[in-house]
Image (cartoon, rainbow, N blue to C red; front, top):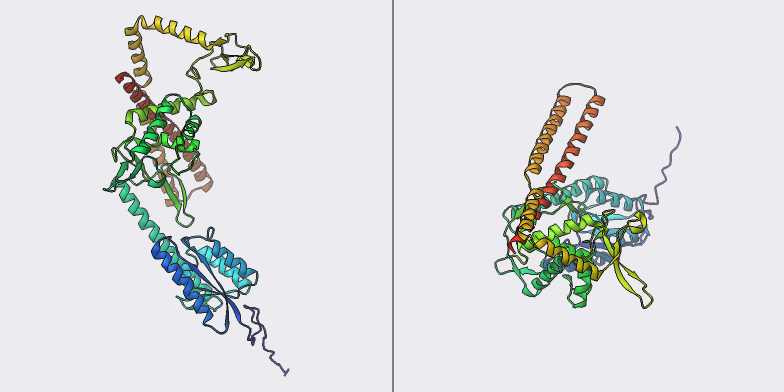
Length: 479
């Protein structure tokens, strides 16, 4: 019988420290609050003070520091700079133990929590969760962490769903909220509804007037900067995006489209534009209007017109994008001849003249103005007939009957294809069949549905544009 002598271990495999070592462990605390408010700030200060005293009270521990994240959500670790610094220091060997209030304070994302704790464990760094009362190096530590972080994640999901339900309930009740600090023209009124700030509303009206006068968004920005008018954010510089947002925001005509964006994932808190994934709510007359609805609609028509013109549009002159070449259909643009000598002059010619060799002549501004007056006088000699012809053209161009009929047909086709998909799925789940054939049919029906849906969305957009044109026409004749 062989003689066996047990040689006891001298190194802890987890901490990598001598088992009988009297060396103090380097300990750090971690404190986080998830909202930036006075109450949470007090909690934040209390946590820092508590863990500083708590670690220093242990003679076998050496206090390093308390890492903090103030006003940061725990659903993921991407924006938690204090947390990332703590992990980095721990992996660099500066920390042996991390003391934390609870698993939910560490991370409410199950994956982030486990990945981080495992990484720390591999490098001999332990975590202690005071509320739950266990160490991550415990035999059941990882199981407990998995359970507790899963519960914390589900708690976060429940909170998110409750908040989302509350928001949508307010939307369905027609309650409008605005980011007043960065929303030009309105402030929160005494009754909680938006109230007009006249000094800011004047700027909004100026923006709309300049756009209707032919100015581009960039030119409007420069004009506002010359007048030393601050942007909604208080900056001396205006951006094209800000002006475009003001020109297209329905709230300025007293209406509100609610839930334009929504949160895709409660863990990542990513927002995306609502393209039909969740309900939207359109509230008419929800608050006082700064811009009359007819003028707002007219601006939307002009925005669509300029978008169709593309780069051909210019707001530098009243003649820009108005003169059309009889040869190629392109627009005339202003050009400078003899720019460096005394024969300098501004002329108008087809922008495609050199490339397409158009035979239309170059004209100066005075000649164009004279020709316009002559043509206008000739046309106004039969004013009644001209107006009647214009009204007939407007009625024809804005007739919605054909568009409505096509929208109804496509909507019906969408419903039929959707029912075919449902039947196919039910049949596949209730009886054995070739999955290859099933996928082939399913993909074919899906493609058909997406194609029809795409055509339907285009027609709905076209219908909206025609409606806006019809409103603009009504406003024109009313004037």
